[in-house]
Amino acid sequence: MMTSCEDDDDVDPIVGTWKLEKVTMNGDEIDLDVIGISATVTFKDDGTYSGTANFEGNPESISGTWERKDSETVYIYEDTETIILKKEGEYYTNTEQEYSGETLITMKMFFKKQ
Image (cartoon, rainbow, N blue to C red; front, side, top):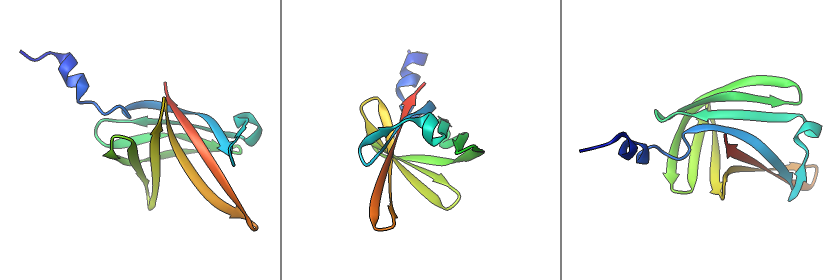
């Protein structure tokens, strides 16, 4: 006899709503209010996601698909962009690097399940 609890075991742990909790830049935590960034993303068990992001007062809706690559890695796809999320403790993180002049800037975003 199967119970609904057994079905819950098959649900990927990424399924649910995740909120941007913190951001680090070159290892230093940055106040989200100071840099004007917020984001909330809901991952569905059908492989889609949707959410909202606000960067410096410019809100936008985001949506696309996602897939699990391994137990620690999720790829999310929005239009032609691929974003990699890595499991780190209670967070999924995304790390991006870009140059500002000759200085390499590493920004890491930490999302926590709500």
